[in-house]
Length: 387
Image (cartoon, rainbow, N blue to C red; front, side, top):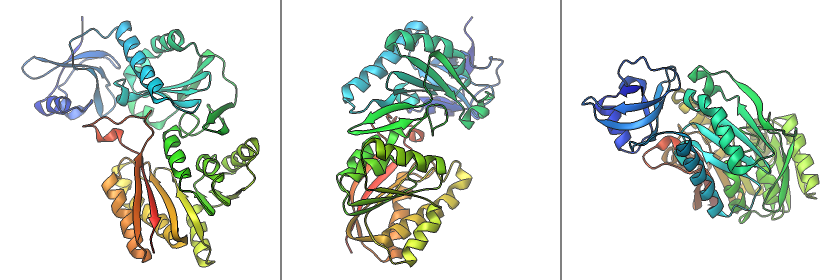
């Protein structure tokens, strides 16, 4: 017999408005088991949706469909087919990209990334984790990958009462995978690299930023050199700043792989180095700021805002007139308007004038759901210093 969950009028309105999550406060008491697919009803007993249920997370329900249809193997097959077909229409000039972006593909809490002939998956809720064997079989059937890795080590799984683990689900995966992004090749460590191995959501922003790169370029928080390598061919010289020895070594290896000889790497604290460069009177024609998420919770927002303002202020002081600043934030809790305000205040304090050349977001294979602001997390502004 199908399990049922009753939600409050506020929860129902949330779903009707296009949001795919219902929080625990809007769910009536229930004895539904962890990770079950449930029939969601309103207080009058009318069908609202079918959803994944969690008995641990504050996100109790993740909507799968607002239609009264069976959620069976064919349902999952169709959803996967639709997500994959959409990526084909994008004609992505890369061998590493996102195939399934959770709520953005109406497959909540499921991530599937392609790295060449291999797939890396994440199941970030009780329901999706319970479905992992069936989803793995479908991915093998649809895509025939050489290997599938479950990169289920994000801390968000702990909120679902799930263990953190990394395991091969199908075939085999090498320790490192070589992928291509445009004309640049780089190595990915699928087991230990950031996210599922690389920052795929910045791919289109890196290509866009390359159109403005020139002269001396400073790439801050460089990680494995995604921006540095894409922009190097348009710049006279690139200084990549990275705090991790391991990531810095990867930049050097990737530069050598691509026969790029104008990238220098320094292992430093970016905040300290920006201040040191300013004191030394150094100047650059292009600067990239792509820091990690400064605000992983609402309580962290004030400190995050302070951090964003600090690095943007220093960068604008280091930037030559006519130069471009590419500045990013991947903190969902700092929305686009707030981030723009921070950059504006930094410009005021730096006593400079800037214009916005482009406002960008995460790559198109990471779609945003209207009515669900949580899915719009990556902001990228390309700015020009006027004076």
